[in-house]
Image (tube, rainbow, N blue to C red; front, side, top):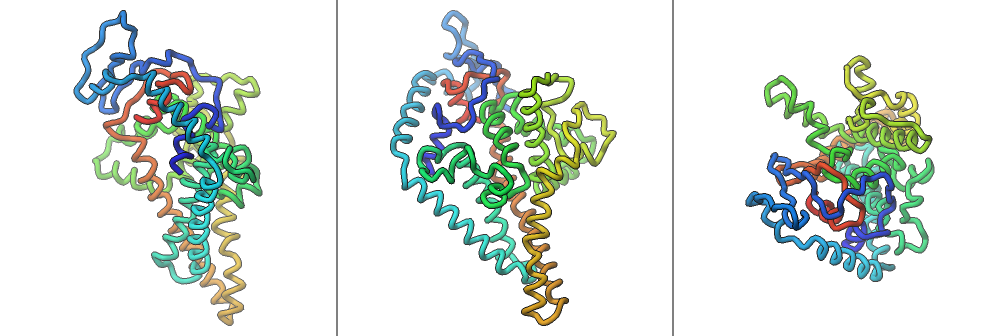
Length: 374
């Protein structure tokens, strides 16, 4: 697993290599700022002809960093780990799949019971691990050169309806997630163009003219719903924008492409936001949200109607089993949202993280450094 993660940083290991990033100086952490507002001075990354600014105590490390040496060490480490990839790595991801499938078995075979912690946690961990460990590392291309069967290959994993249902079935459309996460997020970490820049996306919470208690309540709501309320529509927005650009359409700042696109845009037609509606709700429901909503929460527990009636002796038992199953699946979804929010969102925010005012060249020393400090 360590090999798969490190290989995400080396040239050629990423599944997507964008060509639209501004190739500003690879040596510049230009206009970078800590998210608490203190500047990260360019220090030794600046030209020797320019005076070095005074560094804040927490930024002293940047003045001692050999950026070129760091870049070379990362590349060397990537090459060595790449050569060491093989069957052991594939066995490891298969072991993770076995663990996820075990959780699925426990959850699915007990969900007819009244909602209980074992069933709910098993179902939740099944969904959580399929995304955060199996799909995430596979879609990043971490196993592209290790898996000869090409099952764990970024160029086909979960792409298309059948593969989505059997390999990674979730609220997000895998094709859209690949664009938003693998491409835009990781190649623009901490930049204004990063679609997952948490403090910008939650600016509306800080701006609310309400007591702090209600702001925590808003964050609590997002914790329980963020995958389907924010992440699914926003990743699909990025896919739509990418397709528009491929078709030669011009995307302007006035269109609000950087603004987070959530379901509120359909719930509040006249909310007055700057961003345009990038797609119709019926298209989003048909391609992204609908298949998972119907498949996971209706079709998956549907057999319980027949099983309950057959084993319980009456149709009423079947209805009860189906109802229990739906309740457990819904509770598991809430738990998965909370779990993934804690694991993911909190690691993309904090006073010790930096913001960057410009882009950098992919696979440069600055690029690798941003993967670490962001």
